[in-house]
Image 1 (cartoon, rainbow, N blue to C red):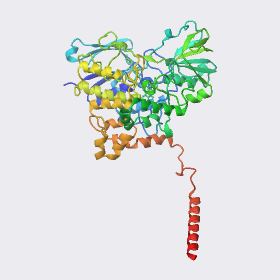
Image 2 (cartoon, rainbow, N blue to C red):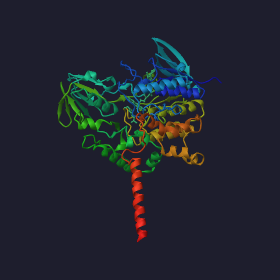
Image 3 (cartoon, helix red, strand yellow):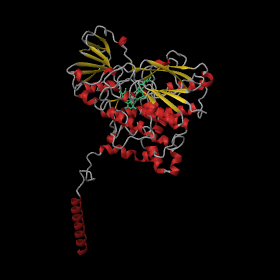
Image 4 (spheres, rainbow, N blue to C red):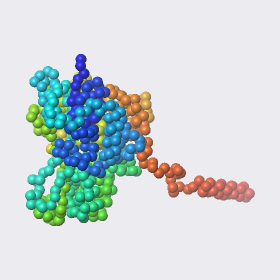
Length: 536
Ligand SMILES: Cc1cc2nc3c(=O)[nH]c(=O)nc-3n(C[C@H](O)[C@H](O)[C@H](O)COP(=O)(O)OP(=O)(O)OC[C@H]3O[C@@H](n4cnc5c(N)ncnc54)[C@H](O)[C@@H]3O)c2cc1C
Ligand SMILES: *[C@@H]1O[C@H](CO)[C@@H](O)[C@H](O)[C@H]1NC(C)=O
């Protein structure tokens, strides 16, 4: 039988993982990438294009390197724990080189349409039309992996802000923001308190004359740097915690998390206290936010009721003069190349475990990375690919359409409220990884592991749930997995050791010579007492 040919759309982190997975399983991938480079969102470019993601210059990851690696390709130990976008690109280039992925990618090639072939119900094949330099070509594929990302189409709900037409200043969406220089001495309002909104407010406040951060619902603020200076995700996202959460009532988890975050700073006092409980909505990273609020450089404001020519009027009737509005209002999801075949997707983009549209006659279309795990994207997208490829090959079967729909309805009620916007697919990291891993048969089993490798079992259970856990056994097993897991803590600490302390004692403890003197003195006194006691 000829090898199955698979189209991979997009060469961002999801697409690269998809190509690698196809090769690993003996399929023949062809990746189409609209731009001239790999990396997708992580590739910083000055130019802003409407059909590509775009980031600002300073974007640094909010997931740490051990947690966000491909499962069989750890970041080198010298990489810092949180990575600037250029460092992530460096890692991706190493990955592509190591697994020889480049020859499978066609750059500057945009996918225009993906349609079922007329004999789809028996072959499951697709007609894929691509465009390079204005010329169109058409291909037939046995499977399609859509890896086009979530952060391309800005959501700019101007109609929610009366008076926008009147406003004389400048306004942009956060997608158009690159760096702070242009905003020197300006009065700026950032609308929206997601990760981008908070990042931009902090960065701009160094040059702006004033920054206002407007939020309708408030948010819980997480820190990248967690207890004892460890990366937050490596402390919280462990298998052990995931088991505890399963048995623990939600209100207790909420109370624990909220107390913990309020000890850093009181969210109510700082005007950030959300109406929702911790687990009901996305939290935002903002290690520096409290510093900027307490020094008055960022002022938290409620929702904007309307804009005038030169100011914003808020829902609490206060008014502030402003020069620039930045809408950090997130993104919408769309797949333009699928649009004319409306039967492929329903309006809610309901997909079985966020991967397979349930209503297709043949499961030969998979969405990879169209999910926002509370955790890292790279390993989540990669495990989706590993599953998808097995389904393409017929090694795994999907349940009936009705049971898939039932599962989708269950997922919608999943802890996080899924809105139409980018709250789409917010799932707890370990739970989701385990769920897909069980489909493939690679979910780690710490209990049986305790019998033959207690050291490994202990780290799998109590340590950070790193992606290498899903390569210990089963299909796609990687011999390096054990080593990667057992060294992960050392690799977290390694890049911090740039000033290695020669003396390993804590600085306040007594020096050795003093200890010796004290000990001698003590012994002397003791001897004297004993001798004296005898002489009586
Ligand atoms: C500011 C910001 C910070 C983030 N930080 C983190 C983080 O720290 N950790 C984390 O895990 N996640 C983070 N994310 C989430 C992020 O989406 C993922 O990390 C990751 O970039 C998703 O990659 P992707 O490959 O799915 O999509 P993308 O990176 O968006 O790549 C999609 C690719 O598809 C191409 N493409 C699209 N349409 C077509 C077409 N029709 N034909 C051909 N090619 C096409 C695009 O050119 C692009 O290269 C962040 C997101 C943002 C916006
Ligand atoms: C990191 O930031 C991106 C972009 O705002 C967001 O989508 C993602 O959920 C964040 N990661 C976590 C673990 O919250």
